[in-house]
Amino acid sequence: MPLGLGRRKKASPLVENEEAEPIRAGLNVPGLDGLVVGGVAEGAVQEGLPPPPTSLRPRLIFHTQLAHGSPTGRIEGFGNVRELYAKIGEAFGIPPEEVMFCTLNTHKVDMDKLLGGQIGLEDFIFAHVKGQRKEVEVFKGEDALGLTITDNGAGYAFIKRIREGSVIHQIQIVNVGDMIESINGHVLIGCRHYEVAKLLKELPRGKNFVLKLVEPLKAFDMISQRSGGRSGSGVQLGTGRGTLRLRSKGPATVEELPSAFEEKAIEKVDDLLESYMGIRDGELAATMVELGKDKKNPDEFAEALDETLGDFAFPDEFVFDVWGAIGDAKVGRI
Image (cartoon, rainbow, N blue to C red; front, side, top):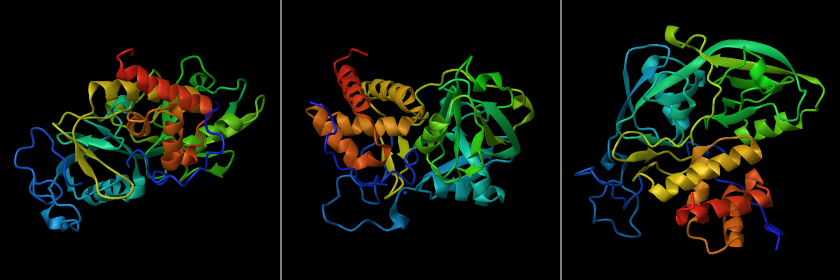
């Protein structure tokens, strides 16, 4: 039976910010001795009580620098990526809109260290800000350009991977980490990564198109680097004993690290996202695994996807493959 027939799409709660998508009550993070979770001592949480005042929630402080070089700043009190960028802006006296994306524990444009929706409690945050603008005319000689797109959860889509030997790989001034500002004059600020990937796929073959890009400002030891190889799953779990999971709606959550099964399933689902949609998004993959791990059949899973992530309009064959990947990970086939 075909998946998705008659499925009704609902607005996705992750449309504003799905990667980065402050602490939920009742969580127990190993190693965090004496942690007051959600503002209430562990074991004292009662159903139906109003959320505790912000002053009683755990105080999580992170260290940060600008990736091209700066003193070290301290930030706290953010619940999503937009708030994180605002805190970084306050720390360094720059507009939040200048922040393109963040990496964890490295100042380099390393897509394996990209900050998604999770920050390890001991992670160091490096903020990459806007650098040089550039414009390039590209001839689309093939259907596939060789680009994998992601976004920062705050309105900027950028290049996460360039496939070796592809159309874009031949253009040396286009690099991993470049923000896609516009395509043929169509401004893309505020668009999600899947919207940008769809636009690129729909460009007519055999014609030129114009890309306007913004590259991240680089330190001296980052100049002339071009990372086009395959990135990892994009899931950033950090080096801390737990992670702070950011959300677009509601409070951020201190959570335990994913299980070995979940890590394998997330990586496989992220590979499927790239194959079907031209995007990599570890947090989206993690959400899909969470939705699917307890479902009894693919139709239940498809319904849950439409309920939560309907805006993506996933094709039925993709949904079936994701369901299969989650099942394979459960029984140890991957």
